[in-house]
Image 1 (spheres, one colour):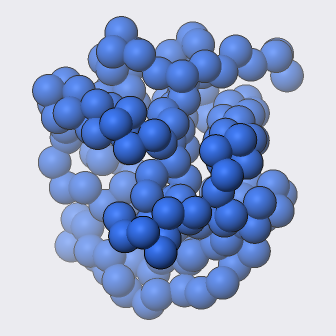
Image 2 (image 1 turned 90 degrees about the vertical axis):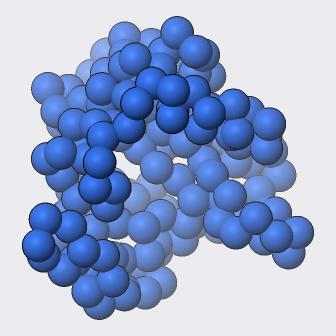
Image 3 (image 1 turned 120 degrees about the vertical axis):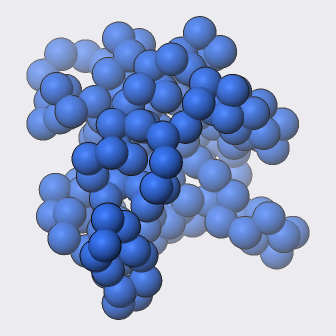
Length: 162
């Protein structure tokens, strides 16, 4: 596997971020959004994350991105984040998800987080294996909590103490 060049996202990365995210909206259960996002929506999203001090990281070639976001925006949860990683369809299986998730965990430690959570479609074995490989533990499963494209989906929650 090639060495990954992972860095903080900038506004110049937004077209690739939008393209990768919208592919996930259209074709996967990596997100339960029903409609693709616009560049303007993602600009506001990036600005919100930057203002809150949560990282959005990209793999420099524009094939993948990931973020940490607040679990709940209340003071008692300020040391807990939720991770998200999205990899372009043509780049899956090349270690990009692993590299980004490792980088996000490092950012979480650097920023003083105590724990990171992940919410994964219960049928997404590749994502579940990835998280478990990096030390996440399954802590619960919500049955039929998400609805997309006329189907109900279970969502597995995983947790990694930092």
